[in-house]
Length: 445
Ligand SMILES: *[C@@H]1O[C@H](CO)[C@@H](O)[C@H](O)[C@H]1NC(C)=O
Ligand SMILES: *[C@@H]1O[C@H](CO)[C@@H](O)[C@H](O)[C@H]1NC(C)=O
Image (cartoon, rainbow, N blue to C red; front, top):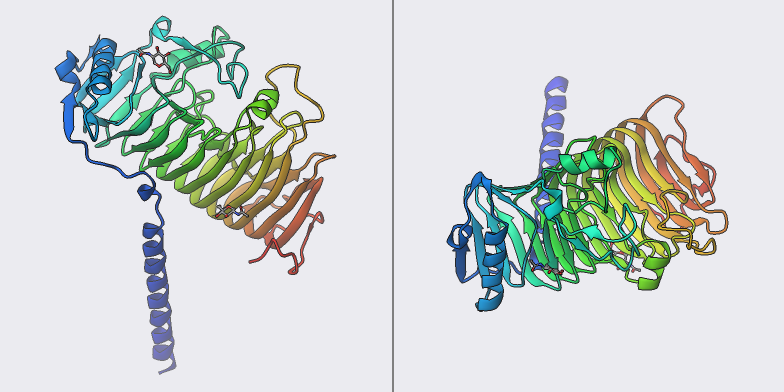
């Protein structure tokens, strides 16, 4: 009788757990950024074939893409136009998009970047960086580029954009690059950008770079590049507001997501922050960071929410990085419900990383890091729980670790200096700099 009774309790517990899981899933499904940009159906569809495109993997289709975009731009069809790329392999040089268009990659469509680097036009460096990120002066334009656009959708039925980045990676390795490498997708000064349901692979440099943008949604993406490919960041929201990245798998050679806002004196002068950034249900691995903020954050970064992410086989789980000379601020950052497995360093907030654009940065331009709340993090196989190492004359403030459990190496301990905050339910035990006090208003369970 007792055994039966025990069995009944077990079943009840199971049912309750199952109901809770279901409830949580429903909750998650409702929390989505898809509504931020209305995805409109377009009244007109044209195909790249209509403009002379040939999807045989050998023909260079740059001119066909330019003609197609020119057609969409000048016809100004009310409600916009879809440019369909059917199944096939479409080799092309870089091209611009225009407003009110959808680039649709059908199932089996591969948009392949040419490897003839001489055919990649150069563009001005970004004002908030003062120079190319890698080398002084101009930079190569991105493979697919948009400047000053509204209402642009890049989507499809699991079509692929292949940057064929190995020629660029090799030039970087051999130090023969002349200019900063191209991003795969870049939007500047644009709003209402929606990128979904496609695969990005082998980007020459960063994969998706919205810079000076507002209202950007990136959802249901797969972004892949080898772990040894240099600087192939997944998504880098940069001096942009209201950016939502969700339901994506990212595995690349550098940070999966890195929020930025300009570099040292150039970023300070340009003064355009990143704010209102949501990262949800992103999973993947990187030799560097899962989710990063910085190190170029000179225009300020605030109001960031990272939720329900899964980081594995990576260097750092959550990585906030800045440096003297950056100026700016990193403020009101919330990380909630993150799982980690096989991570070198679970959590790192560092005030001494990254390089400088030139020698003109100011030693007085101290960044501030304030109100960073890391909650409900569960990690296994974590070598080092983390380090929180602030700047002597600008210590990190209101850093909250709550219910953070990082298991792994025996005797691994937190490293802290120049940091103030609180820790509740942290394993291994937090460092003394974080006072474990329930009365800290900014930090709770
Ligand atoms: C693409 O846009 C850039 C501005 O962002 C412009 O300089 C360039 O000429 C455009 N290229 C084409 C082919 O229209
Ligand atoms: C902090 O950021 C969150 C988004 O993560 C936002 O909802 C909230 O209003 C921000 N709080 C303040 C005080 O700005």
